[in-house]
Image 1 (spheres, rainbow, N blue to C red):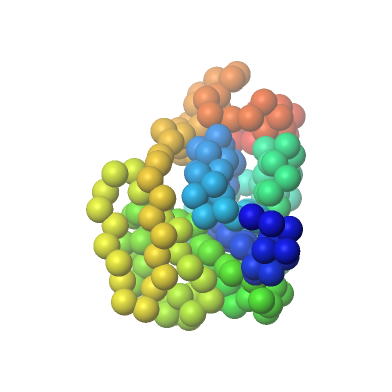
Image 2: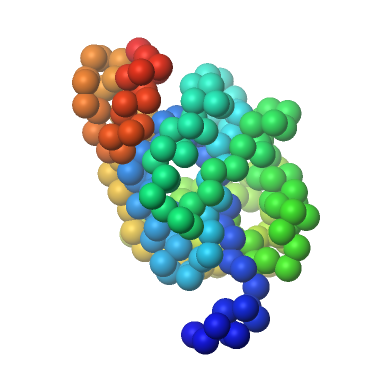
Length: 197
């Protein structure tokens, strides 16, 4: 692609929301898969205050989760940590975030990264049609069939990762010194702040 063609095309920005409690190597792997598959310019990691699907959860503080994201993505020039949702009323609704990002980045192509299970649950989300008006969906599928949905722009990317934030928190709570699936810098931060103990 020539420099003039790069300048002519709109920037491609993917929004990757989640609790990131903590961010792990699976999150980074899936973000990189999406970036490569869609030639994304940027992936914005958006930690939420409280997920509308996990309103009974009490994640680590937003500042800690943001710092872990910054540490984990420090060597990735295409990764941006965005604390937008941490400053909004909880819970975080995806359509509101997408509309805010569309206003912030006019003229850009916006994408929303999600898993196959979330794609299946999407009709039950708050105002999914408003989310669909703002973004194209990148669905990361582990092997399950992902069906199209009328009015939704869909890109299926194949790939998965075994990492589990629940398992990471459990191993730390049980005294594991080197929990699996964490960047060394994130593991050091968790130990320093005594998170999940």
